[in-house]
Amino acid sequence: MLPAGPAALLANVRDRDPARPLLTHYDDATGERVELSATTLDNWVAKTANLLQDEFDVGPGSTVAVALPVHWQTAAVLLGVWSCGAAVLDTAAEDEDRLVGVDVVLAAQDRLPALEESAGDAELLGLSLHPLGAGMTGYAGPARDFALEVRTAGDRFVPYALPDPAAPGLLAGGLELGLGGLVEAAAELAGRLGLGPDDRVLVDERTATEAGPVAWLLAPLAVGASLVLCRNVDVERLPGRAATERVTATLGVRVDGVRELGRTGGEE
Image 1 (spheres, rainbow, N blue to C red):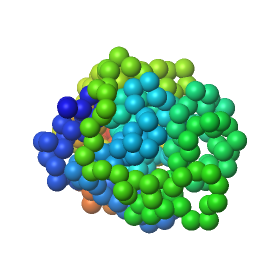
Image 2: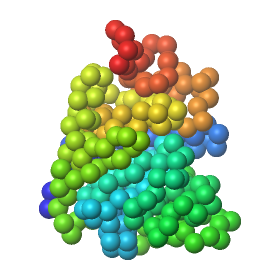
Image 3: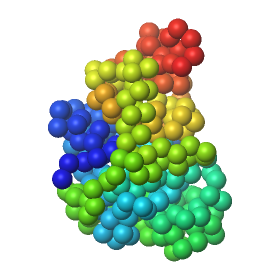
Image 4: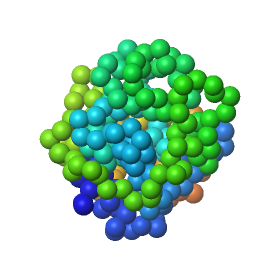
């Protein structure tokens, strides 16, 4: 069964160039650097989708709240939800009061205490966001540990029901996009930004959070570009990082000698 919606974007990149670095994640507060090829990210996505489908009955018609920062594991979670044909409720803006009708919540460990009060009957999964994918420590609440649960999930995902491109895919503020609409929006944005398959785009956490996953994740995937995600950015490190990672464009940060997306010829 062929992937539909945003999952198809990753499948296209994986089939075209499975071993090339696709997503590199830095955290300047911890010194973390994690690099994933298209094959490795696809494996994480498949495991996440299998966990959600088999353990939590996530599928078309389900809504999954994602309360996670911009992170490589967040990319896997988002694409895993969309692989199931479900809608993502983006709660990156710290809005815990919008969880009515949510089936599952995936949240960073530090956000779990607040979410335990507002999640209602939704299942809770907590993520430590450990660079090596380790589980949570020092947590004794009701949330299940994503890292422990996902390890035993299958490496190949086949949805029980084929995702409907017209079904809801992203709910963020007043915005609602269908699964097919996410793909269209990603391709349109990639075209406006002038992204191509040879681009390697450096994105900072602040910009990515404000712009949303269509900008920081799906637009690059739509054209096969690769990503360098940076959390807790130390701007003094960016020139060296851009050179080391062979960055060709930036989104939300300025590095001398590297084109800044959305700034050429005026506002985006």
